[in-house]
Image (tube, rainbow, N blue to C red):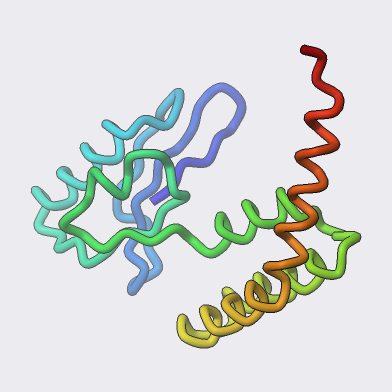
Length: 144
């Protein structure tokens, strides 16, 4: 389930991933947790069995559907990481993290988790030192 915007309105879509068909959609002015809950309830009342939800990670969705497995879609996960490391990372740690993130859509959970763990193990000390230096640099610009 997700909402796509077209100017001043959005289309909230609920999709059957097995049949690859849209099964419910609503026109909305903005995304709202209530609309997602209402959509799932509508689908249940129509006889649909909700086996899981893939979503953009909107705040509150994981709690709202605590009896249904919920997963953030790989596209949104990748986009969030890319936002922080940029499309062309300069640091070697960022370049390697980008490679790991690109595995997300082409590998299984265990392989991805293992690659991420290995990356973290390799770069943890560097990241702690880098972040400490950045924090010190930031604090030196604050006027007390």
